[in-house]
Image (cartoon, rainbow, N blue to C red; front, side, top):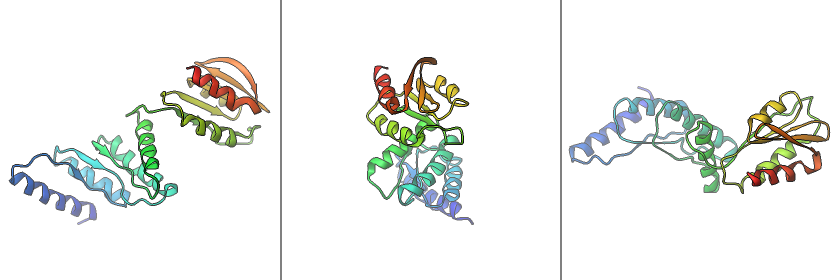
Length: 205
């Protein structure tokens, strides 16, 4: 018997015990460190009971790897329609856990909570310091509560399309960027002014 199935059998023993005592206010958690084991266990028990399930991947470690492991495990379960409450477990300040949880929910369109940043990987077409620009924008977006979609794109090939699709975005060229708002081009901005200009326009929204 696999570890996941053993977890489910142990949980069901407890469920039956509680039910035998006429207690039905039950929530079940089967969190493990191993993602496949956790997914297997929750999938199995979801087919057996109607009680709410508290999902997560436990003891995932520091944010660098823990966020990935949590996102894969929790995201898989939520996409399958499994899970009523979630907990991201990181060796970090609790605010990192909350931030990661919201990002998982946002990525699956299950919750709106603050901005979504769309930014591209750098490539040979990039002619601005895109990494610094995107990081600066991300830092400023923490202060924004409105669910706005922001695009920071590094070239004139894919950039304009993504920037137009966002509520507001920039498509960068050589030392400058085109600013789009609600799909319309509104300005050409020098690289040094891109972040400040973008944030001013976001706040106007």
